[in-house]
Length: 339
Image (cartoon, rainbow, N blue to C red; front, side, top):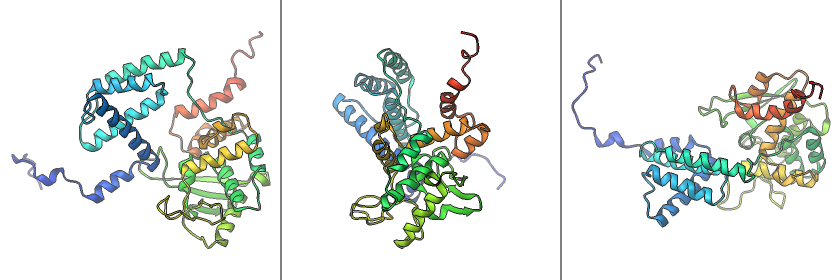
């Protein structure tokens, strides 16, 4: 085909058609938890538009700015407003409605962030899980119960990997490969890996039996095998009757896989049981923050290796924010000036 002369022909109707299979692949490009949050944000926006007699799709820049102000007056956190705008933008993108005019939204958010800070508002961050806190949490788990064995594996493996809660929940038994020095764990999908290239995380044996991630995972795998589970999800539900992977009709994945929210609940429950300060604020992200700060505080810390291990992008602002918590005191510029 060498003739690239444009054809003067109207587009065929199929030029704008996508099959159900194509739409399903587009849907899978966005994590389920994000889709669920976007759906809720979109519903709230459309409900507001109906009340205000505004058009949600396509939305004008003025409608977006007014909605952002509406959320601000409702004292929503700036990050919550930002996510709502992302959900609206995604809906427009999927509908082929073109890019949004966000100029007014940016000004509203800029003014609101200043007001939010003046009024004492702060960005809520999950506390970093220290090794001392980790040991205290693990000590509350009963090693003679399935729940105790599973929860210990979730907590110590997640910490050792510096993993996101979604990454922990998504692990399969087939993603674990024994190694003479520990485990090689394949993370197939992550927030910063949009194309699903995956990464391999080396998890070494721990020096403390109670918090060794390799031994904790092996104990859990043995328990799964005892219940006839040789493949499928690594971490599954356990109901109050002790049934492994049981899913109530119409609820959850049919394979019994836990969710990222379950990971957060496991961590929070153990933190409360251990009597930790601000235990209710602990979440799945506490493992990730805790790993970053603990690894950076080690004598032979290597920023590049820490970032690759935890799947942070090069130059990640989030990672540097965690490390600042260590350097704030370890490398304090005011400490050695003779005050």
